[in-house]
Amino acid sequence: MHFLKRNFKTIVLYMLILGTAGTLVAYFLAGSTYDYEEYYSLSEPLTTTQEDELSIGLNQEINSQYEGEAASIGYSSESQYLSLDVDSMSQSELSTIKTQFDSMLEEMGIQYEDGVDVTITAVSNAVFKLVIIGVSLLVGVILGVIHGTRNRRVETDEDVRYYLNEKTLGIF
Image (cartoon, rainbow, N blue to C red; front, side, top):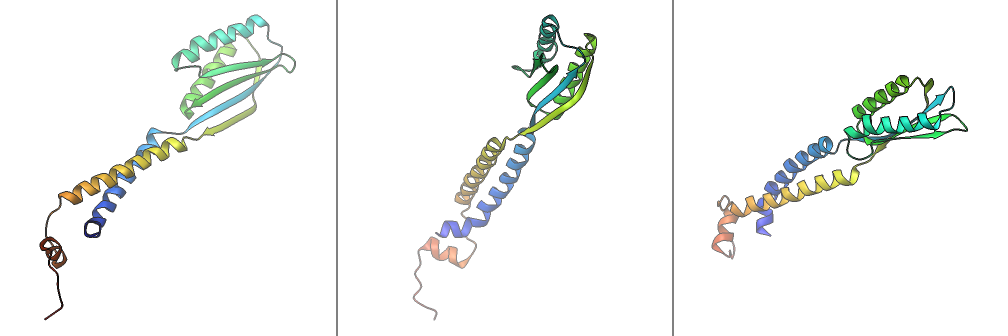
């Protein structure tokens, strides 16, 4: 109990410092990512050849730059809507992918109206961020306890009584 009473401020200080550092790391390291879905209204239906060329072009130009399948397309011949789906990308990557996809459509001569329906959903990395912050707080407690055990300075009368194991019977 004497240890905790004596080193409480040190432990809390380490927790605050490393907790703040962990919060900053969690904010910047586990940045926000978004799921993006946009529908394009086509003036005329796509042929299966055009649809295949779009899929191949998407894989070669866009998906090859990222790990896994970053973007995918969907086409409904009944409604003549083409959808672009992008999963878990940053805002700058989303704009790059959209620009590349728009240029692909223009190169193929497909007439379209973009922005018919756009859905952007933030992907929450809350669990990952909480783990980073929790680990940094735990490391702060451990470092505070280590610093407290290494602090053997006798600073107050209470420390003298504790270390000499004195018992006072009263004040004379």
